[in-house]
Image (cartoon, rainbow, N blue to C red; front, side, top):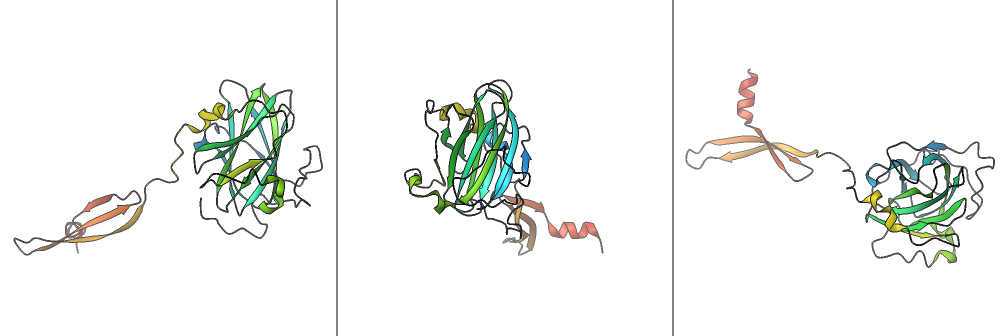
Length: 255
């Protein structure tokens, strides 16, 4: 989990259209001209490189346009988010052709595919429950059959609005930050293994090593009694990097 920034007055950069109650995600044909519309950016085929669309909070509604194939170069479209607080994220995935598209919920904290939404219907629907603020999660689009443009719509609610029907899904494994619910009926066989290639590559490092502390280390020569010093820096990886003798540096600089 990551520390969260303060939300601006508009609540988030994704600025939301408030929805009246949980369960009311509307068709993408409805009047959502005021809803933020995002576009996928390739490459986003691995967990390391998912399109990061930032923080989601209750009341957010957004739409993502993309394109996916059922083979070749574009097998997965990964979208990364961070929960501002415990939330339920209801989604609808509309295929723009006769393709059968699925969605999986990926937990980058544990490096596992939590569940897949894999009905034969269009739109594909489901709910991702995020159990803690600051938790990251990915929604990953994949084609079971056919190439297609698509629209992925998300609506975000406080977790408690999920209701009693979500209780079984919320019985997550210890340490898990995510759970899934709202599956459509007539699902295909479990496809989680089909998403192995999405997350088998190492996750990207959050940052290159950086300096945590720097200073001078004083060294006493027991034989001569001379006191010397050396520059050092300690990196975020715990490594001490020696930078030379400060007296020599000062002498080189001159008066």
